[in-house]
Image 1: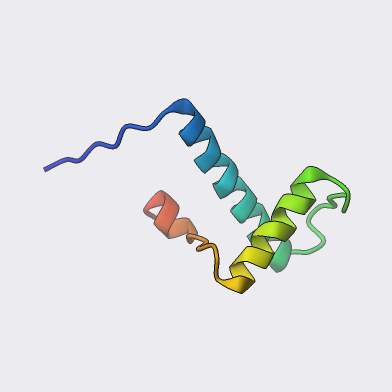
Image 2: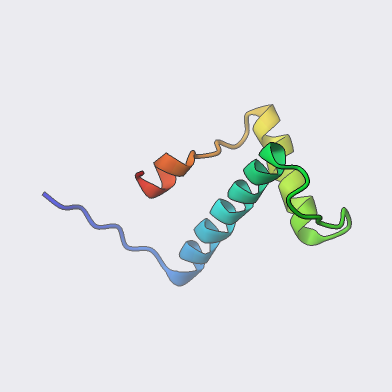
Amino acid sequence: MSSQIVIGVEQLESIIRRVVREELAQILVKEPDTFYIAPDSPLYKDMQEILHRREQGTVKLHTHAEVWGE
């Protein structure tokens, strides 16, 4: 039996942004010299917020396998 989930474009964009931010955060932890993001950039601030929320337990970060089923 197959299940389908229907979501809107805005919801999909939100999910994609969240996954990309989480993947970037993981890359920066593992390979801090991979690339430089200016501390005053919106992406840097988003990543800091995600890290802070994870430390507080208010957000669950999904693993690559959970997201992509690999």
